[in-house]
Length: 240
Image 1 (cartoon, rainbow, N blue to C red):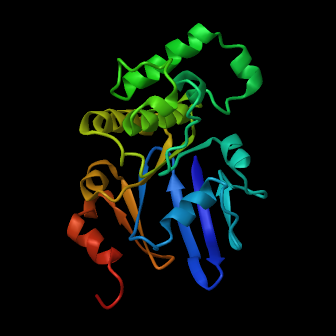
Image 2 (cartoon, rainbow, N blue to C red; image 1 turned 135 degrees about the vertical axis):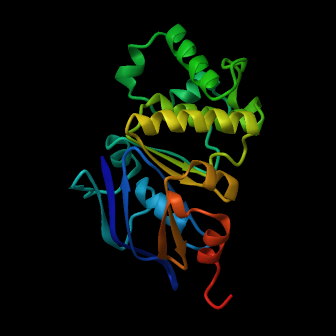
């Protein structure tokens, strides 16, 4: 599968967040989007996720142009996003949070015991086998809230999994477990779009890095050329 971003632009008043950005994302790869704050990476991720409607340009999935940008449309095309902001319903259980937004008809066909079992399986895959998934999500530490949100995305068996700073709240054990899941999904042909400010993670997991600066694509760096010094040079403002 392939996601093609073609000439995407978005401004907020006088601020040009994206300026004719074009990127091809291929299935079976971990494609990292890298840039300093204000580079446009968050706006690009939100556009791919249907949260932001671009001013111009297009997004296509397997040659089908997305005509109506919305989170629902993105999800219908198999795009699941774990945003930097940890989004849980604090008064609902972990299980209910993992199944939050799941198709009501499909959820009704899954017993409570089966939902709990699947939630526990997902948590175990993510390095947390002993979590109390019946507890209220709001009572959990941020690490387990983030695991809850990641599990929600994995439950839906995405064709595209967007991880927007999803490792920020994780410890090393949980991060390594997530990376094992990412490698398995990649081997199954899933596209992983990865955003992280941690250079060691970018070097470890990326097949391709697209660097943004001031709302524009600076370069696409293949796996064999990924090195911290090179990436930092590309990210730096012009003249620095």
